[in-house]
Amino acid sequence: MVDPLPGLTQVMSDELAEIVTQSIYFVVSFIAIYFIGRAVVIPIVRRLMDSRGYEESIKNPLTKVTQFVVLFAAVALAFGFAGLGNFLTALATVAAAATLAIGFALQDIIANFVAGVFIFTDKPFKIGDWIEWDGGSYSGIVEDIDLRVTRVRTFDNELLTVPNSVLTDGVIKNPVAKDRLRIQFLFGIGYDDDIHQATDIIVEEAENHPEILDTPEPSVRLTELGDSAVGLKSRFWIADPKRGDFVKTRGEYVTAVKERFDAAGIDMPYPHRQLTGGVEVANPAELEAVSGD
Image (cartoon, rainbow, N blue to C red; front, top):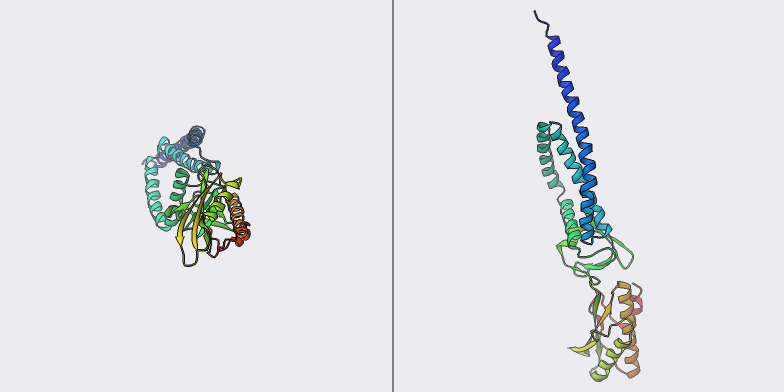
């Protein structure tokens, strides 16, 4: 009778040796692929982002995503080099099922992530920009952008954490995206007042203000005939617009027009309003309070 133990011992020894060998191949392959990937792929991605002019706030999250992709690729390739194909197939099946389940549970998070990618690539705004959304209901200065949310500081010093999908699903107004901003302000004067005199005053005060551009020239148009007032719409441009500079310039300009109207005896019965920038002013006297935004 043959003793089976030596044969069984040999089989177990061979299997153990194979497992140890595969483990060594896996570890060595993973370390080599991962560090080569970090040394080659990530710098290439960083250079591509630099060539497109991405800011550091955008490059950092995308770099983290690239690092995750390199890590996943290193694990997958290391399984292949170690001869663990069957295990890799089983792992992929489990991962696919888990991804499907997680996808249903995390639809909002995934939507915000995809929206964050679009924000990074389309660049509708950047950190430091003054933006408005939801029809002007919300506005503020962008403080931070990541792949899930954007953080906006309102002009009342409140911090809004906005899901990225909210910003990509609607219209975003970015008044400071360009190097110039046109401002419109509707002045109202009485029917008995001299329209030409009022128009000259509005244009002169725009020309006298150092922050208002001479080109394009300020202009005034009669746009409304109300029940008790004539509406004169002033249009003028400012350079390098920022929220603080815009409010200051607008306040100084409208205050100067109001003082000239008072000196000339021009009545202002109409509820005057600023038509660009998302702020309405019921009365020029309120501009002092608004200027504190």
